[in-house]
Each structure stands twice: as C-alpha cells, then as structure tokens.
Amino acid sequence: MGEHFDLLLAGAGHAHLGVLRQWAVNPKTRPAGHIGLLSADAHAWYSGMLPGLLRGRYALEQCRIGLTELCTAAGVELLLGQACGLEPAAQQLQVSDGRQLQYRYLSLNLGSQPLAPTQYGSGLELLPVKPFSAFIARWQRWQQQPQPLAILGGGAAGVELALALAPQLPALSLLTAGNLLDGHPPALRKRALAYLGKAQVVVQEHCRVDEAQGQHLLSAARVVWRGNRAVIASGASALPWLQACGLACDNQGFVSITASLQSSSHPTVFAVGDCASLAHTPHNGVYAVRQGPVLAHNLAALSEQRALRTYQPQRRALALLATGDGGALASWAGLTFEGQLLGRWKDHLDQSFMRRHGNI
Image 1 (cartoon, rainbow, N blue to C red):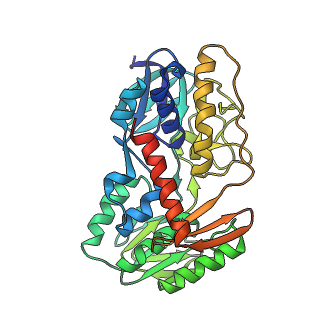
Image 2 (cartoon, rainbow, N blue to C red):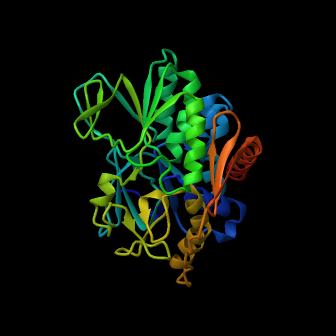
C-alpha cells in the first residue's frame, strides 16, 4: 500500500498554481486532511515568458516559480516525480519511480505534449518544447554551436519561438500543417507573416510533417526540410497513459470533464488545463488560469459535501504574441494590433502573474 492522500494534485499547471496560491493566502479555504502535489520538476515554468528567456530578455529565475516555498505556504506536501499511470477504480496514481500514491480525491493538471512525427533512424535531434526544463537545457547546449533549425507548428507557440530564435541561428524554417495561426483572425496571420519575413524565417504552410527519416523531414513522402535539429511546437496531444487509464476521454484522448471540472466517468477525479476536454474551452493557458478559483472551491466543497460551482468558459480571450524585439502582436474580438506598447503590456501581465504566485 502506497502513501495515502485525502487530496492529491498531479501536475503544477496554471490552475493548480492558482489553487495553491489561494490556500497560501487564505488558509481557511484549504480542504482538511493530507494534501500532496506531484510534480516532475521542483519549479513551475511560465510558458508566456519562454520566448523572452530564449531571446535573452529574461533570466532563468524570472521564468519559473519555486514549488517548495509555495507548497509550504499552502500546507501541501511536495512530491517530486513523473506520473505514469492511473487506476481510477483503485484510486491509485502511479509514479515512474515505482511509487503508488493512494488518494481520496485527485486533481489532474498535467498538461499535454506536442504531437511529434514518427522518427526513423538517427541524425536528426527532435526536441519537444515541453517539458520546458528539458527544452531549455538542450537549447543551451545547441547555442554553443548554432545550426539551421526547423520548428514544427504554426500556432502561437511556433510563431513566438521562431521570432525569438531567428537572430541566433544561421537559418530557420517554420513548418505548419495548415495556415499559420489557424483559428486566429486572418489579419493576425498577415501581421505575423510580415514579422517572420523580416526575420528571414522560411514559412511553409500546408506542410504536415509525418515522418523524420535520418536528417530529413517528410510531408506525404516528400522531403520538405533537411538538417540536424528540429523543435516540436505543434498542437497539443494527449498523454498516452492518461487516455488509456480508464477515465472517459474525448476522441483525441483528453479527459472528458463536466462543468464542475470533474471527470465525466469518475467524480472523485478532477481534470483541468490542457489534459482536460470541455466544450468551448480551448487548450490555452488563459482558460486554465480561470479554472483555478472554481477548482479551489470544488475541491473543498466536495470533501465537505457542499454545493459545487460550475465553470463557464469566457466567450473570447485576448491573444498576445511576443515578436522577439520587445513588441507584441494582439488580437481581440476579431481586431488585431501590433507594437512596442503591446509588448510592454505583455511583459507587465507576465511579470504580474509571476509575482502573484512567486511572492507568497
């Protein structure tokens, strides 16, 4: 029998950070009992500041939150380890080092993983942008000997990475399966293409990379890029072990949840952020942050047999994309903007988030 928790939080995503902060600031809202946080890293990384870190605008310590201090303030035991399996019927979470963690209630904020092409042979290093600690460590090694680079993924993450990294590389290509910034207003795509062109980034749209063979990236059996290094910043895909554990999932493998943020099949399990699936809720950090207060209330209410709240996703969200030069692109309600003032606003929002969660 493994260690038992009244409540176990798995993953240190945005929603769980909000929950921990609430408990630290207002201990009366913390549920009673033994609570643990399982995290693969002793720090929580803030993805919004990653482009600034890579461009040299931020130091490493400015982009991550120490979980030891936050957990101590919240009255939560920090457990370092990688979740790798779940038996919801037995209420048991499995850790890659062999530990079995028993729980009464479980909350999952584990994120997702970039969708990687199938790789055959060696010669090409494929580096997923997540987990951030591994990505940053590899990038620091790559910087010692810059080489041409491909970025797979034309969403906001791919665009921001390309604009941050282009000045540091001899050549950079951005390959995307559909239109650049698909799902955003066409005017934002036009602005982004202009910035990428100025940075001499080669953009290949409608180029879904299916395979990596040796040093070649292939799309529909056609070689579309050749080199030694590629970063995977494609759309979110579900964690394989999570979609196979027995929880109800959508057709992409993300955990299906109700408006109370509970698993639709196992009400003792909550899921939020990128690992969860709820109608009208994109895989976007803005939505995960807004789930935090509802999750904090419901985790306490369920254990105390009080009424649960429902999460109502916002109808629209502001998109802010760093342009690498201190500025930003923005879209809101179909309107788009750009400029240095937006970049300063983005910096303010990012740094405010870090202060709220890092200075407890």
